[in-house]
Length: 196
Image 1 (cartoon, one colour):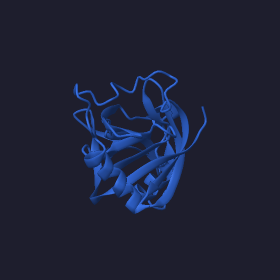
Image 2 (image 1 turned 180 degrees about the horizontal axis):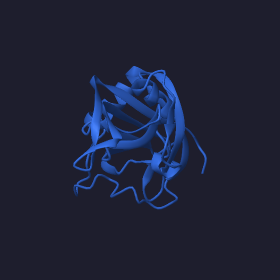
Image 3 (image 1 turned 180 degrees about the vertical axis):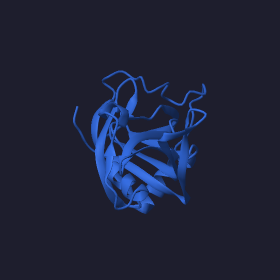
Image 4 (image 1 turned 120 degrees about the vertical axis):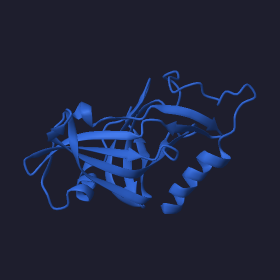
């Protein structure tokens, strides 16, 4: 699985990103007609280093959104052994990808994931905290296979910043800790089936 993720990154960045003669990437934006194969709703699996860490839903129409990150896995990394409660409603769980076309090949369209932050509000031991997942700006990539309509993507995590919502300086929450990853932890997703 690690090799597959590495191949996805290399393919998106090196071999598959050819441009048309007019400089267009072959897909002007993600606001494609609804009959295009990459639109719809899809079940996805989340993996880290080839290990399954959760599931969610990818919705692509006028925008591309993943309805939630693998919260259980994230919470084990950030707050091991502690009870964690999500404070926000499920709308705030959404990660809006903000896809930007970067190229295409015979079978695939390639996109950069422009939204490289994901923020979540939680309660840990009665303390209200916010964590901000920071993804690699240059390596966060999504690929849609035009034949199957299925999506894959990688979003390497560079760091996660934890802030205390009840302890503020100049109206800003105080940083409690910063968890840095070197090398980045490669969070990946792939669609398993179309639901709509």
